[in-house]
Image 1 (spheres, rainbow over the protein chains, first blue to last red):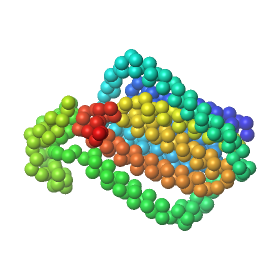
Image 2: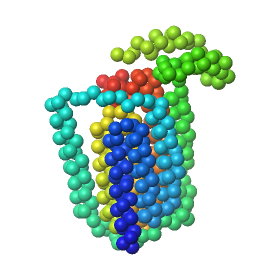
Image 3: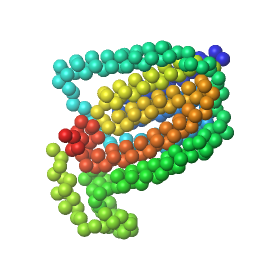
Image 4: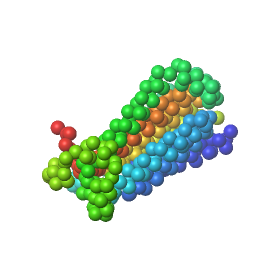
Amino acid sequence: MIGEQIFFVIVSATVLGGGLWAAFAKRTFHAALGLGITLIGVAGIYILLNAPLIGILQVLVYVGGILTILVFAVMFVAGDEEEEKLPSRERVWARRVGIAVPIVLFSALAAAVLAAEPWGLDPVGGAEDIDAIATDLFREHVVAFEVLGILLTAAMIGSLVIARPLVAGMDRDVYPTADKAGLAKSQASSELGALFPLQSMDRSLAEHEDTFGGEEE
Amino acid sequence: MIPTTWAVMLSAALLVVGVLGIMLNRSALRILISIELVLNASNINFVAFAQHWGQSDGLTYTLFSIALAAAEAAVGLAILIHLYRHMQTVDADAATALRW
């Protein structure tokens, strides 16, 4: 009993430490690692709260899926740029706000929690009943479940469309370290060109540079 | 058994960390990471109260929430990559094309 609570405190500290690292690490990749620590810690919290199914799904979906594409995005999006410093007057204010906001927000939340403390009913415990979850999911909330499936499909197709290069060769400017000649050759001979109509349209690289090159100020 | 209040307090603390991350970071990637923290804070609440009242509804909603977070992350990261292609940066302050 008491061991469970000690474990909860340890895991909570891990979650919050990982969260702080995720929010304020110097490098973006370290932030992604901090997020990973937090996500695994939250899975531990779920298991401590008698919901091992949710904990397992948390690890599968968050750590296995979201964190993976996040790490990929970190690597695509490259450099940790030096943020330009604010003018010193604004920096003082930023620091004041940065200290005040978390204190105010957390004390407001804590006060609300403590005011509602007995939570109405006595604790029952033992919610994790996979039969009950299945009944909920596939009977009561079956419409929401199907809509969620449609939403996930739409999100998948949408992100494919959004992340696709608009014009053939566009990435050559963005990723200058890529082997330009090899890239051009592979794109010229690529059979994918036939599959993506936008890429095979008659827009040349020069035109693309006119379109996008002038926008950077 | 773990007191529900503890779990709710943890959730509140994680929410505050996430909100701070959203406010203080200028890289859009960091902002997305912080949004994940906030979503996790809400999920902890769902599970805590599901356990407190012995109802499985909260667990079902948590499953929905996790799926929604996956969709959000996929679309958000796609937009980010597109933004980087256009502007060679993911600084949220630099993306002003749609700002009035």
